[in-house]
Length: 308
Image 1 (tube, rainbow, N blue to C red):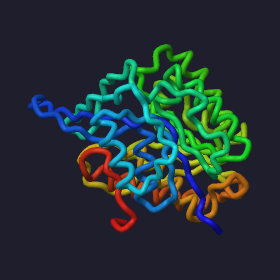
Image 2: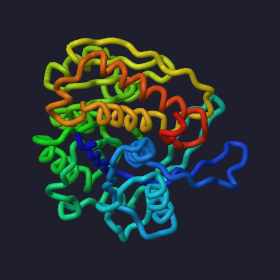
Image 3: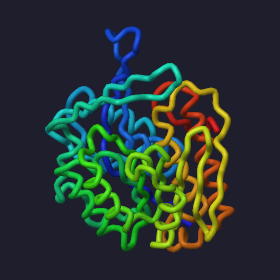
């Protein structure tokens, strides 16, 4: 069996890490949820292509280098005239991160239909986070993914950033459209608490499965994950970790989940439909292990397969 080819579409930006005790010397880390997913996949050895709009500025060159060094194919990168998006990242003593975004008029949100391949020949595409939610490009990506979903497995991680999403009800409406074409949904309990305050994650997940989703994972940080697949629901514990910070943890989880499914013949649409609960348990345990390694070092720095 030929290994599946996985695409990731969305933003690639710079996480400018600012120390709380000395803001004079920030450190620039390549970031952006979709790019982190692509980097995880590439480092784990999956055949991966990133679809992003990258600036020609110094930060854009850093992003290109970072992707290429992580074995990610750049054949569908758009050479954008706009500058690179920047997120100011502050990590508190407990290791959790807060973000302030500088994104007006930047490269990631200006998608046009002509910039996306019509028949990319991908077995799966991962999307979510900001590029799908921020206009004008978000609507373009949504139409493209909906069109692909008839023959391609779509993986979705909303990865909510409330500061950029505007009206909660309008965002919820968009997300419900995305959920119609996504076969795999990975979402954090924190995301769900913002999108549907007070809702029971289990009820939401069971509704999505009933509507045709094949795999739903609700991550809960150190509490592990809740999983729905193969007609069953169950919990998978988090892997043990010496926590440094949580930057990129959810993204490395998503990338590792897709890597496991691809390597075990469960990523293409027909194969995913045969995913058993036991296989899903293995996949989520593997994703948890990869995410734990990412948490054990600063920034979004997922492991290579040789480190596992």
